[in-house]
Amino acid sequence: MTVQSALGGRLYPQAGPVASARRVRALIRRHAYLLLKSWPRLVSMAYYPTVTMVLWAFLTIYLKPTTSFLQDAPGFFIGEAAGDAEAFIVGGAELYRESLSRANRLYLTRVRASVEGDTTFPDVEWNNWQLVESEDHDANEKNEHAYRFETYDRR
Image 1 (cartoon, rainbow, N blue to C red):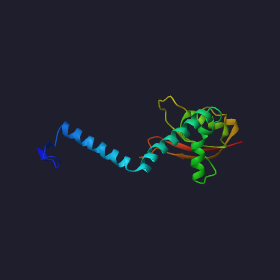
Image 2: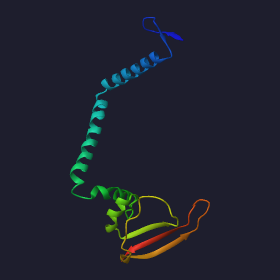
Image 3: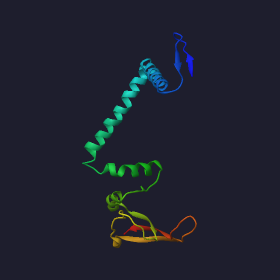
Image 4: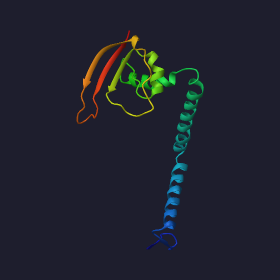
């Protein structure tokens, strides 16, 4: 099917690869026109990605080798934003291993099941910890395995 164009009276196909290419070219030209007619858009398109790249480059190149701030920052920021007195470390054997020496309290969930996997919780010197709370839960329709919530405080 073809439609008569407003420019020059030519007929253009409405479907097919030629029509798709023409639509893409028109969208690109429209986008370029909008950008060139608005200099604040050009500034923001260049400024914010550049600042972000420079900031992350600084953090990863200069701060990471000298401090462990980057490893602790997500948990601290989340805890501080929520107004909590405790920062929670959630995820990853390496994160657990590195933050375990700084922890004063452990919240553990022990699942009573034997599963295959290559990641485990790091070894803990249990002589340094005291169990202060324990809560057992049986398997049910929501949870396939029995589990236990345990809270430990550093001695």
